[in-house]
Image (cartoon, rainbow, N blue to C red; front, top):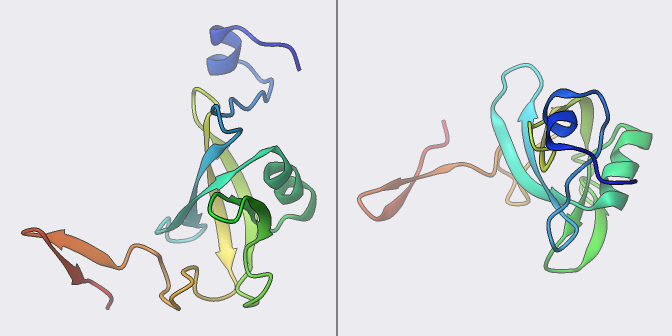
Length: 125
């Protein structure tokens, strides 16, 4: 796709994702009902395409350098209800219905610790 103007990117209706130099977008994953942040991951063009085609969240693993379907092994998939795109089109929010814990540790969310006086404190309830 050809480059679009900043005005079109910020105010228009053309979806033209602005991937970083590594070909990635930041994806913030939130629960569709509570808006709780469940995880943050990265998407390349293939992950974004697979997510849009299947309705199940796919991401790009920076450590493994591969596409992965969230829950492909555990069954804890994320059914995508809505994709929100930020003003620069370089980040997205996926509003999802999780089929189980979002975190690989088994926690509901990956954000289960708070930084308090230089130490991490578990804030799970």
